Image 1 (cartoon, rainbow, N blue to C red):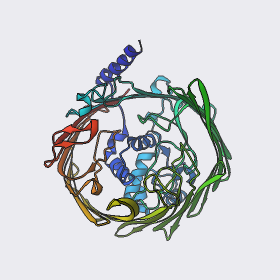
Image 2: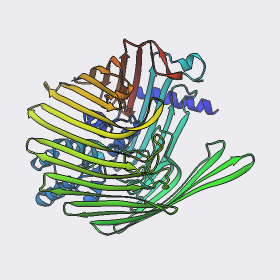
Image 3: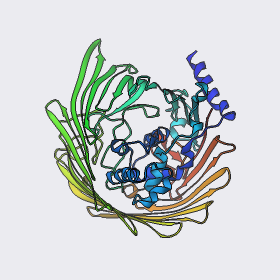
Image 4: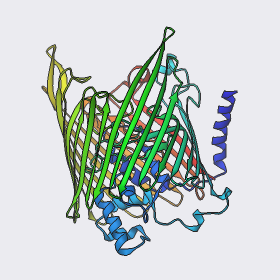
Length: 623
């Protein structure tokens, strides 16, 4: 019976796409999403980063009424930008058009981000008195599959077909009641609902009160004790990537099968205090059950200061040989946020047993054109966390001490970003059985030398100690990685845009020197109802160690950031078709060709031959 219901769900989500359409602003800003995600994702392929961007787009805030605290919750918005928005409102009143902000020192790229995450005024068409006219139903169905057959399907290691199938339904009733349902099947799995997530959310039945039941996430402070799966890495945005933007409780509608909570959560927000409580239990495991609960209380004595406390309990009940053992972790955490003129100061102190982890970050605007960020973090070896994802060199949030300095300079001839991150691991790590250290340096410059032409340059350097085997001896040595990127974007007209990139990599370690190069040419053709993307990539590296990551355009909801190594050619084309008002079809074909190899991949994912190609199809709609 359960299988029949899952089949019916798939048929419904597939065929109903023929009849309905959606108004999805996501498809109108795909160029912006690519820039945001690539900038925040150096060497990571995680579709959940895309999911959080979608959530911000689907739940915009009012740019004319949001205060400083609300503006700073938006990703990639700094204290200087927030103050300029508020200053402009105080001087000129209501902002009627985003183009008005061009008269300030806010960069055009940042204004485009504001257009994605905020709104200026809801039109009369957005507000209806009828209950039924205020129901929005958004549906998404996706199919993708590698065309070549991997060894795991030939030898029977994988039980299911090689297709990956994803379905999602979101229902929003008058911004008050929200329901989400997601089913996902990875390649090799048997059923189309191998993973299922769902949630029900109620907003403001009582002013300031939010309730979520089902799958959800909880974000607190700077992520030392409790955070969602959504976590940006260090990026060329030198002053913003170091600060996390906690959203409290949020619904979970991602296909990642980790770091979510399952149960119920309540959040109440008022002018002077916030209160949240949550409970989660997961019995989907044969040998253990997980349960979590917690309380968060925040005081807002002024518009410029907020202090929050968290109590969080993790419990895992393990059953073995008819015996049950409970493993319990408890956290107490304190977070603060202070905004004063052009200064933003935030930090968190999280205690586990007798160990305290901490991070403190200052962001300050100087001369209305220079933004500086400074951060110090200390994550002791004995600090253990399951849901924490503090800023750092790794996501483990333990055994790390670091000092970060970042600078952004918005000049008349372009934007300069620079950061230096010095870190050390005071105790042995999984890869090195001794204390070790390293540092990262990044410098980038972007400017517009001519109309419709953007130039981008980035230099990145990393020095890190690694363990190598030399003459049958383990040797700890320094490995230096340097990357140079040159990129040119040119808009021939409103319909044709070109992007060219050259990326160089140099790797220097004990008795070896490796290099890599990647070149690509991008074409975007935008017609009346069709947008076509095409890219041709050439790459050559000495080994996997000198691999180069290449972020690609893809179907909405997918992040593709593969590591390319050895020598080869890759190309893809992506078509997005909008046949009438708000119905969207997307299809992508990609092909990787390695002429000097007889197989691609390893183990059960190995493909015999030197071609790896993939096809994806997606339909988005609403009614």
